[in-house]
Length: 214
Image 1 (cartoon, one colour):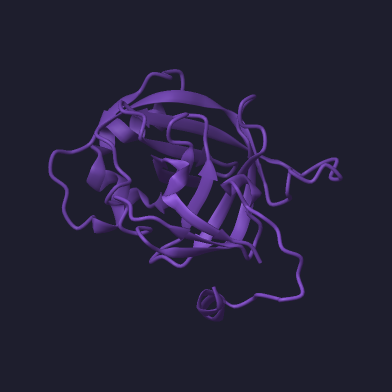
Image 2 (tube, rainbow, N blue to C red; image 1 turned 90 degrees about the horizontal axis):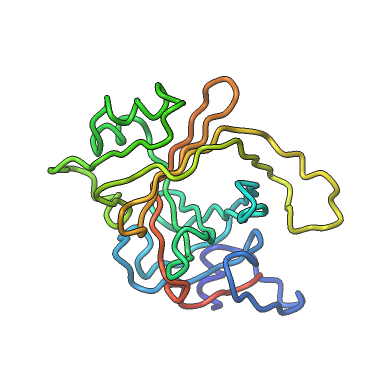
């Protein structure tokens, strides 16, 4: 642990010890060690919470904690989800449009935005993919749209009951889930047109080998 904290910094020995049993309990500065996984970006890696966002997505996810992790070749978004009860650990990466169109046919993917009244979009991954090693383990084969609704995001911790108003920012939320429910695509469309797209892999909670609180 001393070596880990010498790499990432932090580690006040006078701080009270806390236990972490779930990604929901992570705070900025906390670290964790991943087991080996199909996702090469995180497999066997040590990650540190650099930033956190909080979501109100639906009645079942009204204070979703998303921790932005450093320690991999790109930012990892770690949280928990109700999509797959057997694999509640949600690990996501942000993807750009040019990457999306390497994975899916552009016309099919753009239809998700161009046909807002159609809430049953279904997209299939292209048969051959090249130069996308960073997406290994984050892609399913066939996705179906399951959710489309207004949702809210904040940088203020909604777990803190002392905060009356977390200062939510509204956005349009869409979720497409793979047939085996091991992958998903989350789309967030904000006022002004800014759009964030994430590829998601759902894993078992024991894929986190160990937590190290600050």
